[in-house]
Length: 247
Image 1: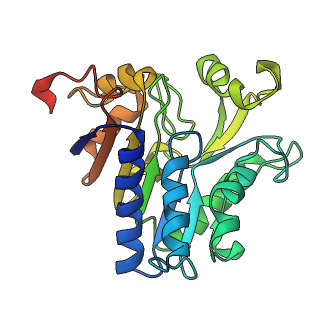
Image 2: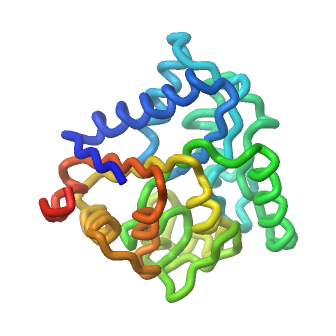
């Protein structure tokens, strides 16, 4: 595991974008695992800028998103489908057929949705680079703290802490979906390289608990310490509780 501590959110976003762009420049048909939320927004903005400058090309890039709420239509303003369109897809030359976001309406069979998503990842040859944020409780994707964690893409009940944290994107906490489809820990760990981003004081405890040298399913991100190629990029505030012995 490689840990990089940068000055601020802007520096974190710039470093992350450069890493993604570097892969795209060396492998035109790169397979990217993408995250949503406020953390990667700066990275996406920088990637759009680099595309407009002619530095990167999304024409052959394939993407898989980590997760999506159950029951939200793809055109719902708070769906991750819309998030990706707003922050990246609508601004670059990526082919819609090359993008995959797990979608499960109230009428879909979750098991079939999850199995199909896993099949698509395998058919693409696996994920070259998986971008991750981290929740305040240490979740990655929507793999919430638990005594057991699922390995493949699955249906999950969201933790109250996660629902509360995500309520800022909705009219009220009552509007936040209670279920989601998420890549499992095995799906994430199967990526050739993982890039985890964290910014802000509210992520400091999660970062500390995830990369302190101990592993627990109660802090899902801590399992990344077992991955063969992980880069963690955090700003000063998110790194504030990491003991010097682990740097």
